[in-house]
Image (cartoon, rainbow, N blue to C red):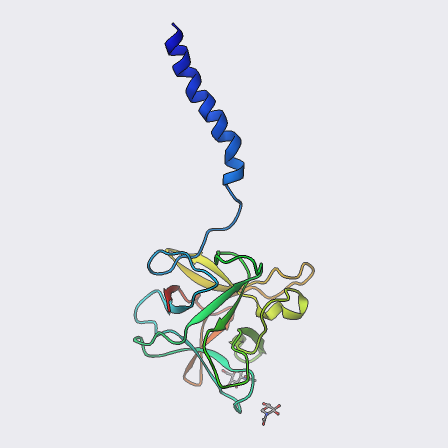
Length: 208
Ligand SMILES: *[C@@H]1O[C@H](CO)[C@@H](O)[C@H](O)[C@H]1NC(C)=O
Ligand SMILES: *[C@@H]1O[C@H](CO)[C@@H](O)[C@H](O)[C@H]1NC(C)=O
């Protein structure tokens, strides 16, 4: 009779051990964003943001539509073969190296540029007639708070892929406009933008 009892007790003991340890192992963090190879995105690498569905244009780029000074507009290359420019992500917690969903990030074009202007994304002003906010550059990295509200973007799961969202949580008392980023065509150019009438751009991340 002794052996069966031991057999019964041993699994219970192991179960108790696992239960005891699981709160330490399980962390309450949102899941990591995965690239097209299924690898976790990290803050030390660069990626191309590409439409997840073919026939929806190429990668992201920036272009000066004004007089060559800040800010530049974030646009989508029309050519489906184009990867656009590589991008890098900096999570709101600078110690975090993994890029996670539902987490505020600074996003920048990771290029050496002779231009003095920074390439960090910033949500521009509301355009009344187009009813959109265009994504521009010339934001800054870090310093989460009211001053940098328009510099924080997040990645969210969208069906089996992802979408970009502006809804910063870096300021407790702020009530920022929130929404998905889509493509707004202005003067024939495909602008990355936030606007109530825009379909979210379904995206994937290809390591650059
Ligand atoms: C560029 O245009 C903006 C207004 O659109 C103006 O404020 C700025 O001074 C101009 N910069 C140069 C260098 O001309
Ligand atoms: C606002 O949007 C309209 C329509 O797309 C565009 O023609 C106009 O230049 C925009 N205004 C500004 C200030 O960007």
